[in-house]
Length: 402
Image (cartoon, rainbow, N blue to C red; front, side, top):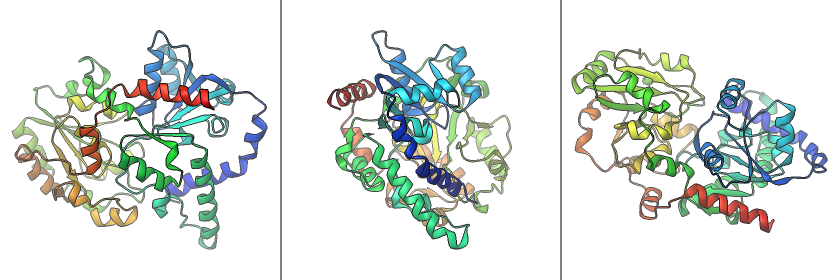
């Protein structure tokens, strides 16, 4: 069974539990209880908005982070953060009472059944380049169940639409973002508002040098060299054989010669075994890193290597070098599909194997036009400051008018 099918099964199960939501309406919502979550960890837009609120001395809102990760729960609790364990009675109770719920990925970030009837705000996790939601069949389809595939796909579509319809407000960064998300989610454009994304507040502001993120890089970069970050996206059907590094010595020699360090950031859904199958081994110059917030790392990164992920627009605002690397270009494009001409975005600079990538690293400073896209032009020409403050004010107005 594919990972996407497992996720779609959960949506279908929710569809049949939906009547419970009507029973829970006897419990009144409290507009001053706000809940934030992210199933990928304590990261991204929901984290930034949550920390902004708990750091505001004048804040009167009861704010909570909710998680299914017991270790994360214990860690946040030890650091005096207001946190709820998803599977606890208190976590369920506060979710049922919350007036506002925020997510970065979907209702899976929260207690889905208990939160869905609150005012829900979608902060999302980046501008879509790859097709998402109803724009790609893999998002809802079943392939592994023979004659049941058609029925299961139908139920998956219905449950996904129900979830999308229940979202009250979508925060986006541009008119192009608004248009694309509205079509993919099949929801009215009036539910969208151009606020910018909370992560921009973080990326633009330098963090302290002895932060957890900085320590990850400085612990390994012992010669004050260049930090190269490789952050590939997830592959629903696994990685192509072409991802294997045939000549690891070439990469190692480049890193030594250029005094560079190669950090590989694993996607939360990519397994460690998949990474090892690439044929890359850790060394003094190569490190696998995970469990950190990538947006907080950009100030310490000199070159970003990625495939076609929305993070190019986030890192791009710092005007640092970006290299595009995708070894399964045709397969990946046909699997999920792209909204844009990816050759145009990269100015026709796509590396399709490790040898090309290493050659490009040697000449990266000769290029300074890293992103060619109207969404990127928009966010550069229409900078929005104080994004988190603006979103909070908008939500408060929604509550007053609701």
